[in-house]
Image (cartoon, rainbow, N blue to C red; front, side, top):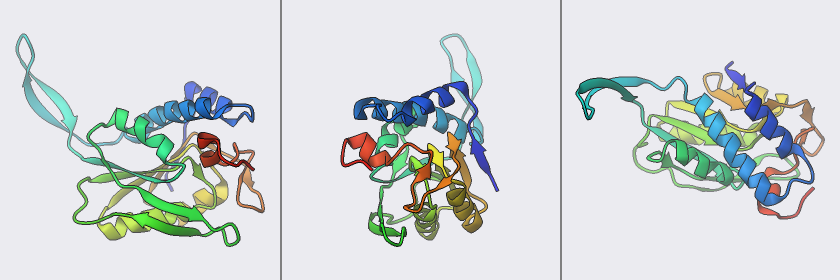
Length: 209
């Protein structure tokens, strides 16, 4: 299992602001953006590099550049709030949206959109979703990417539940999971406790819990 929960002070501070019930949607979106920047930084610390000769204004030197191509796979709709920040870190990354919603009775993911065609243009794909609750949507996302031909997949989220982490890593033990926090448990409706509510609703100001 490769579950990494960030202990960075800035991550913990911003997560505390994100949890607050009185945090407005626009501030919530900004915090999601800032947390994503920090988590993408941590989640990419093992990308491979290659040496390359370049000319500085004074002389030639060797520099290190990425040898792996990176892509992002945000799970709609909540994952949309993480895309802009991810692209700030890696502006040339491929982006493949995965449309799913959770059936409120079965808590299973219902797929409604994906466009994984041709050959994957990136070597590593990071699934973006603020919440890792039951883990079923994340598992389905990994399945889609693997069937497409992607061998290296990571998950980047803000808050996870132990049930979701166990589900994802039980199905795919080779997937690295990066979170800002691993919370206590799920409630009977599949929401993370203590959590922060519904990340999609809170980002976009729609109906709350």
